[in-house]
Length: 471
Ligand code: DGY
Image (cartoon, rainbow, N blue to C red; front, side, top):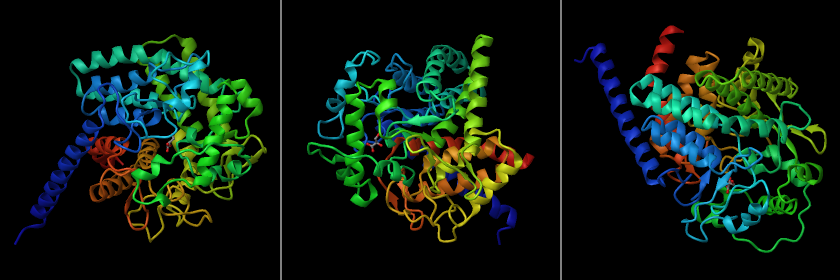
């Protein structure tokens, strides 16, 4: 009979073997979507470079090649607008026509803005959550822990990207927060990255859609069932909002004074706080002037203050704020964990957030296939287990929560998210999102950022066990 010690060794070897296989599959997905200096977000549904996807992709790539990870971010930042904005899409001129809508032709007029970068390639004039400084710091940390030539390469990369990151964050803290609230205003649900989340329902419902020529829904060709994607009514509003932004010639002040959709996004704002913390560390590494550091420290303080003002003590979550109506957005979604992501929260606030996290709305629902939080609280009237951000579980959102839990020292809970996410991906593949109850993979297959976060989780195994031992 096998002793219990031997059984443990066999179990560990089996786990290790499975992890090695999963890492090889993740690497394959990233290779297949690799375009040389940047990575397609997904092979068919998203054939271009998306801003926050690229940041997560760089986090995974850091474990494969420091140089390639750095290139991923640098190639995106080549298309920075004069204002500092990083566009949410840089269009791939090699993508087959008819593969994505709204494609480059639809955005070409954005290139006429005096602030736009040289085109082609065309870019959109929206932006997405600023995970980039977090990714840059990650590249540095991986290089440092591996040692060798990578360290010099990573330092040179930081010197190149740092001023661009500073400009990007400066854009968000000024143009996107003219009130000085500490919260970022978004002009379109696509800017949140959580397109059809119930967070945007009320603000979208108030948008009166004018004359729209017919347009294609290419996205529906690439999913198993149209119910996995936003509805036609959502799309009409998305396309109408783009039309209004183009009509305003992408001018920030004009948009701010005329646009019907202006919402303070707490998830975006929290990511910016965490990214500013990362930027402060980068400033240290490259020995940036004290002036920069004071500015960044001020941004962090302002961001945390803004998030504090959005705390809803009844829901025990943070709520977005509709600038047009002056009202909070009362929806229980995963974005409400924003203070966990921004960090610097009191132990009392952390306790409340963790209670919500463990509740039946989120990771504590006994019907869940894996104990991972659905993107929308399961008791919300708008909850839908199949539809994009209205219920499905997103590995990339869980990476953010895992990373944030490690930052606040909640190692055990972080380890659970990591393991459940790896089990989910091992079983369902590198899907964009998953049905929280059945575990069925949804959306795109072979999504690059799912592969990237899986690689990072796999690489974090050692770190995780050291922290668990210390806890
Ligand atoms: C899409 O096309 O689904 C994107 O989220 C827009 O950026």
